Amino acid sequence: MSAKKAILATGAAVALCAGAMTVGAAVVHEPDQDATASSSAATSADGHVHNATGGYHFTIPADFNGGIFGTTTPILNRVTFNAHRDSDGTVSGWFMYEQEADGEVFRLGGPVTCFKVYDTPVLERMPEIPAQSQNRAKWGGRIEVTNDPSLLGRYGWFNSIDNGEGANGYSDISSIVGLGNEAANEAFCNSPNPPNPRFGPFLIGGGNVQVR
Image (cartoon, rainbow, N blue to C red; front, side, top):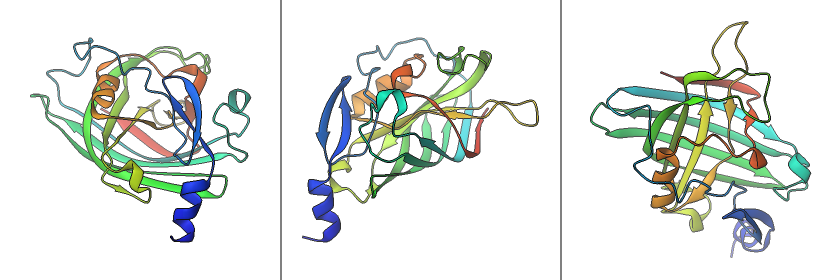
């Protein structure tokens, strides 16, 4: 067994499942709170062409919300994605995500399989940012490339929020990755729910999100 595999097998990182804490060698992620949402939930994307792209990074302090993610170091997140939704509902795109914490680096990526655009309400953790229309991409995809074989075939998803450009714009925003099966991924994209304030979201530290 390689040193990297030994670390993955024995290293302790916090995984969040259905809102409960469990310990195991895993990417730190938020629970799939939208997993039970109906696939017929109202959306703002049906019948329209939408595109979203992003290349950004953000850092989560180790003590965020009382240390809910269970790391001893800040969690560094790097996201690159592009997502497209045609008028007939066909979704395409690709994503890559890298997470670093407690000396471990996890990488995962693959094709974008779900993507819808929603309004963003005033977020509990960011009351200074006003509500905006059609600026929040909920997207996710199948993990086909990763340095953790246990993630192959699973799905990862994000909220990526475009807060505009220029001197009058606010910083763009991202959630931490969510992980689950295909049904949970689709339920996430089909639900207009904003990010759960227990787990974020977070102002990006550099880069950009564009939703149009």
